[in-house]
Length: 148
Image (cartoon, rainbow, N blue to C red; front, side):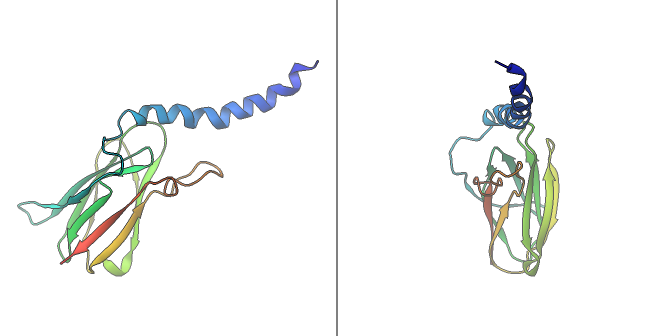
């Protein structure tokens, strides 16, 4: 029996399957309790800016429902929870003054905008590995709700 004919396929399998499995182990431990995430109303600072901290991890945003007031400046402070899997946070609603696509890293990074229209706008992560489902399809999405 020729064992060498299986060497290349096994190496390729390890290269494609092992990194994502190893990467998830670091993030799973940091996932917030509570399952589905939570709804948060932005706090307004003394400077009049609405602020919310958002953590993205293994297919979640925490919080995943953010409520802000229309025509008031917003600052989202976003960071990745850990691990090797890349994440981003995207909202494409230029008609409402909300339009960004920002990579998430280990340190908090500010995203600033002023929403100009009430409504609900989806935030998501569009990262994916090869042909697998995107992070959005795996549940890494949420809502920015703009109210009066």
